[in-house]
Amino acid sequence: MFLLNILKAIILGIIEGITEWLPISSTGHLILANEFIKLQESEAFMTMFNVVIQLGAILAVIYLYFNKLNPFSPHKSEIEKKDTWNLWFKVVVAVIPSVIIGLPLDDWLDAHFHKFFPVALMLIIYGIAFIVVEKRNKNVTPKCTDLNKFTYKAALIVGMFQVLSLVPGTSRSGATILGGILIGASRFVATEFSFFMGIPTMIGASGLKIVKFIMHGNSFSFQSTIVLLVGTAVSFIVSVLAIKFLMNYIKKNDFTIFGWYRIILGVILIGYWLIAM
Image 1 (tube, rainbow, N blue to C red):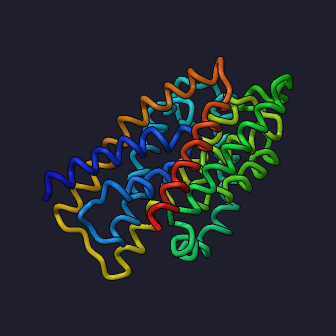
Image 2 (cartoon, rainbow, N blue to C red):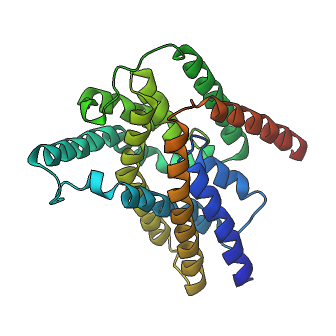
């Protein structure tokens, strides 16, 4: 039983590592995967697990972009250090809407939207959005191609788009990348800023889930702790590869293929849901 749980945690870690950064919804995929790959753990543990393994994914961003995100680097000039601090301040501004709106709604969203049909519906809706936005922007030159020129106003607007991703199936990276593109950022700038927004957002969400898990009278056994650590470690390794793939991919391609993937998967899942009813 324990070894089977470890194997399932590895599979879920792979799913998280891939889907966290590609704009196809990691939480949505994990909820759907739970229909077929069920860990032998409580529902409370699974709700917490699906969020906390995102820590592995966010550690991949810190690992890959450590120098860019480090304002104390001795290899940076004073201007570069100032730009790094400004980037962090913009990230803080961007996550404020999710903190204000997300914290009070966390339990309500868990109860009403961590379900099969809402996830499938959001996959389709935002899949269509990606296709429409990319078609509209086909011959449009981005206004912002330098992350240092991404304004505080732009950061706040993208932060509002992140609020939309509180609904499972939306995709945090998908919503924020779409927001960035809509206000004139290049795909590269929008994607990098989305990655950096994820650091405080996902660390905060993971911490919140762990606290709630413990406060509701749950505890970590040795085996459940190992399962959680394995899933997190795997998501870190796979995330490193997924981030490198995505950043290379968008240098020559747009997000249309991800839009079609979302739509096809969403339609298949709705069909499965209707049959299983």
